[in-house]
Image (cartoon, rainbow, N blue to C red; front, top):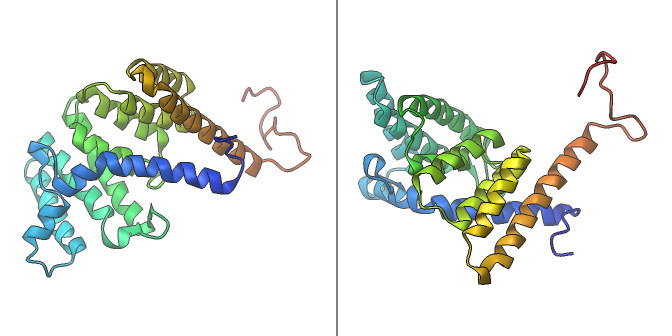
Length: 247
């Protein structure tokens, strides 16, 4: 079966596909700094670095400047949004990324946690209406290749969708993230929306993507359950838990 994910290699393939989708979604933001209030991306950094400075050093300077800005204006939502963005860009450059595995390193994850802290403050100050460009970066930050916080990835993806024209691919990504987070009802609603927004001649392709996301999430959950259960032992009880406790 095309989407049989029992083999480790196939699960890896699906992960790679969704990582690629995330990169395509955010690539324009990272490279070109799309978004007026938070402009200035990776290519801008190269241009401003005179060609000799290390990219990580360039981003660190931008982080330092952004941190100074929020200290000077702690109630400025845009300043916190910019800090979130540059902390993410710092995390995704240099030793923050394992180029072979396509995941964030421990150093990169530490920077992502700093970005997450700034993001929470930004969301609060923006009355729950953050920039979709910054939200896109945080979808990647909270993904399985980053901080692995699927619930927060879903929330950030909803912030993206709230600011953009509804499309099938956007809802496919929301559905995939919601399945991974175990938010089944939200995932199914997003799947229905994705199919409704897709032209009839493309629905089979979208349906296949949704099926892959659903099975990938199911395989991950099953794998996690197997890792915590001793063969032959009951999986319905937890040591030291009261017998009357409901799971």
